Length: 366
Picture 1 (cartoon, rainbow, N blue to C red):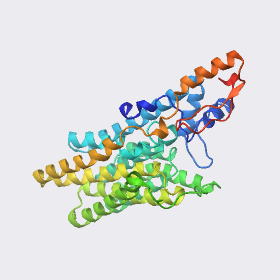
Picture 2 (cartoon, helix red, strand yellow):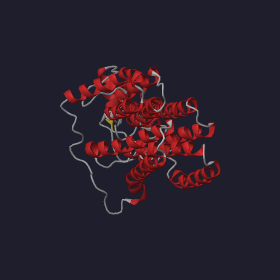
Picture 3 (cartoon, rainbow, N blue to C red):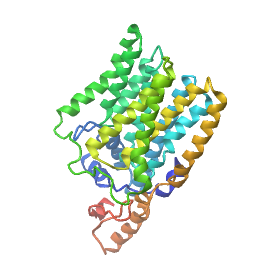
């Protein structure tokens, strides 16, 4: 994670920007927000950052973001290993999240976008438990709570519990009630909000010259999901745990794509969760087939790894959107010197894209 984002470590992302941190510094610590929807991730990180010296806020928020991505990747690894997947596949499940190429534009190192790896990890934890005969309540509950207080799309996870109702024995279905409750409560809170219709202006179609990054980010997860669901339904008719696991993950891909499009249109941050879930869903299918076709699957897995290396290498490091401005601490140091010289009383600083400016920051606030 540090290797991916080190060039943008000392930056304030242009979206959500610095104003949210400054608001927390002015109005005080806040853990939970309910407008425009229920969330805790962004407000908590910004509140902690606001307690630090101004020149340390960029590096803290970036490292905190990287840490959350890494923890979510480690959660993937742990849950795969617990449910009997090979050590290699367990490692890859974590790496597919933290190395997903489409996170390079505005997600890696952005404290406003940590909701996406959290949603992916929650979907994997819940899906893996539901896919087995005796799901554990506490991992599903932790995953549900984390998703509920971080991502407005958390109600989509309710679909996974529907899978559980259809696939689990009757005596095991009662274990789904507690972990499903946070999702239902979050859905009710968001429905009671007046601002749950998504962005008022949004891009809903690809433009001329959109490029491979945008086109692949939109179409590849959908294509993989549709093919994977068809294959799992047609070829894996027996109710193996991996089959249910894969169907849950690949179905989540389509649900997230549809909901993201409806609420926000086309944006690079909406590629992250679908792409990670799609490739991890394929990984689950390969694990299922590996038990019966070891040599064939080894060859196919190698080919898939080589194919995935192309976009990963091409789009590995964070894009210019997250690293184009001078370091945040460097800008603050220069500004403080200008304040001491009396040449300025306030100034605007550059955020990560090198173009977007903060609102004027007074010398007293520096």
